[in-house]
Length: 545
Image: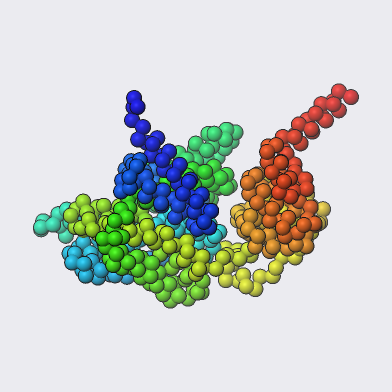
């Protein structure tokens, strides 16, 4: 090769092998995450064959963390964050203290120093951003009370890790220096001032500038520019936050998303970043797998089991007890506990820093990596076993009152999607005084449908439980107004299975989508381009007549 292709090779190997292993995992009916992790092991330095660049993979994974936290911020508001502060702040601190104490005991039992054991325990105390958010998003829980508590908890852990990563060099890089204590306090004070300055900058300055930029780009009419503006905002704010204010990439991206989430363009921004978020999230799991040396499972089985037990059971039991102590129901406590029963990116960074400072032995880093791999593998299983699926009628603003919420009456017509097309359909049907049930997964669109007079169900229409909540078995007509062809096809197939007599009208953007929807059971498929061409031709003929 005439030039360096390590970046291309890493991306190609990472995504290619992840696709094969993810497809195999899906075929075996296990979490695709297991396939992505195995792909990382296969292209990593500890197995024969092609070896991808680990350093590049970790940087690509960081982009995935940034985009994921930006996406969460788009659906999160400052009000949501402040609403859970009373449980998230003390809960995260106490849970981290418990996990750190357990890690210290294990480290001392293995013969390590107190300082090394403390760093080891701290690395076991913080959950992975990617794993937690992917688990919540897969179950439509991000915008529920359970999800808000878990995300708020994650933000507090993030801030704690930012503080730890700055203080560790100050503590152990100056050992033996009489001014170490004064330097430590000075470093802690500087970190807190930078965090406060960052938050103030985002809420006072960026809150006015970023939405204005996005609205200006949106009015330019260029979808390419809008997509570029969203990505530049997410990555730029995250990078600037890390360079200028020394906070994490994830925290910077979250605040950028939260500010843009207050605008009417938040839904479009989320849609534009979704493909990249998914791709880079996969690279995150691949990068984790690349760090794993399978030999540790054979050479240190008991320490590995003890490490996994702290992560999966020690942290979870502490989190569960804390949430219950604050008076929240059992399922909320269980969701938060299982969400935190894994470790990830911050743990690797802290472990690397501990080894570099010669505070923690390399053996501890191997145990952290093994614990991360195994806990990430177990996490989807624990979610399936211990967390009940969200109900179709679970409305985030009134989760505690859902049990008493009446089931929506069947209106005969069910509409899926209340975006640009769906809102026009809804206004015409409701304007004639006819009953309409709308299924929508975005709060702002759902509120607009409710204001128009429709019965609203908040949820993912591709899930059978949500379709049944709309009483599709007795409905007469189903209108699918969402633009995504793959999701529409899945809805048509499930709807036809629920009610064979249902009249299904769907929307498509290509001849291939039309054929797929008809094959799956749609009675009528409206293709926008064809309808537009027909209307324009009619107008032209009328003008000539």
